[in-house]
Image 1 (spheres, rainbow, N blue to C red):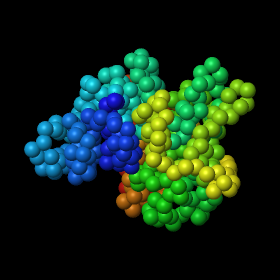
Image 2 (image 1 turned 90 degrees about the horizontal axis):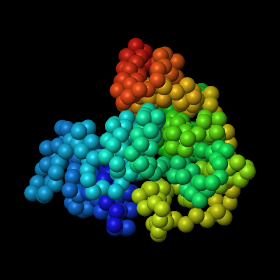
Image 3 (image 1 turned 45 degrees about the horizontal axis):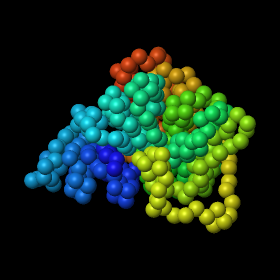
Length: 384
């Protein structure tokens, strides 16, 4: 029986991961959430977790009240996440928090020697070199949870002796596929949150609408699978049935298919290398009838282009564009900027950041801080 800790247990990935734990008898030792103290407490009780962390410190009293009389160690803030990331007796830590907050706990788990199921894109987007080098040094496995990266990981199993020529990274295209810049000028938050295939948190859903999410996945794939930018082809696949594919040196292409349901990649990461029953819908290709493929619109969706330029240049630029995007998305969700303003701000930060190599985690955090500060200042100067 495996033992797991989950960061981000009350989010979409975390709640589905707990369903997998329940079905397959995975012991849950620790749970962490951002601010939903009530749901976190319910999860702790149901799964008999020994540790609970609420990231927002002002929610700690509520969590204490919900868990009064129970023998649970309560934690808060980044120190709480680091404590959970370094617990003894944990086989794998699922990191499904949103944003840069996931970087330090990932590095902490690696230092402790704990394997990681990674659903936090920003860990590798901002800290790819540091994270991958640390994992290699410590012999820690990083199992991808994103459906696209899981598909690539699955397609390479049993092919260790065959060289990868490149990968096909599929994208749903989000709710605004085929739209022009003029079409997107008056997009509302509600429209941007209306994803055609996936049910996700608000931040990642907006990222899917701007195609920033695919840009982040492009960067993440480079680090996970040791690829160069020119080895990655992004293909818009509206049906989200082919989750990604790998092309080998003989030009054979192996893809992983399935209904768009995150339980499949979550379960594969947690139970690797075993495949067992998964409570998802059977894939019927005849029900779909046809699958379609298109090229992305790199001019309209500036975030995607910015990500590829950033990782091609390297250094702190991926961390900078990621930080800019997080700040801009928060501003869009609160009505402070337009939808197109997200891409414009990300592009501005890319063009106005002086690049340098990353030597330590402080370099990453400083690049993130400077990018957020730049975006906040520009929003005050004029409306995007």
